[in-house]
Image (tube, rainbow, N blue to C red; front, side):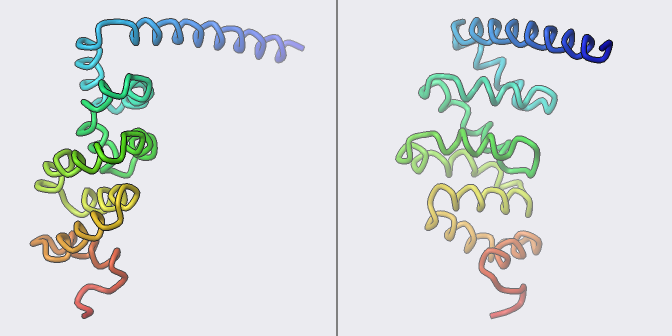
Length: 163
């Protein structure tokens, strides 16, 4: 019986904390978006805060959410616990807007990135537009970095050196 009482107390504490968190989330969403955006940009770069920042970004108005595309692409470019959440938010943008803006958001990562960035961004592009993904695969196939070229070969279904 003592164990059950402990579990009941934990549950009560959990629901109390969740209600408080919901109240704070609502207050943040109703606050001045200019300041919240600054806070969320910083939080997205902090692994300990990233999940909560992604949850908050997903609840912002679409026009405000668009400002986070480069941050979201950054999260979606590495295999990690929030990759799917970042992709989901990215895919929630209007398709025309996303097609017009995704290359700008991914360009810095591709310029300085390696095989991990190319692999994850190609995966993301495949979710957005297959032709765009194929163009990036072809670009990776002639990259100076042999590991990036290997990523292209993975997507093309051939072994490196195979013609």
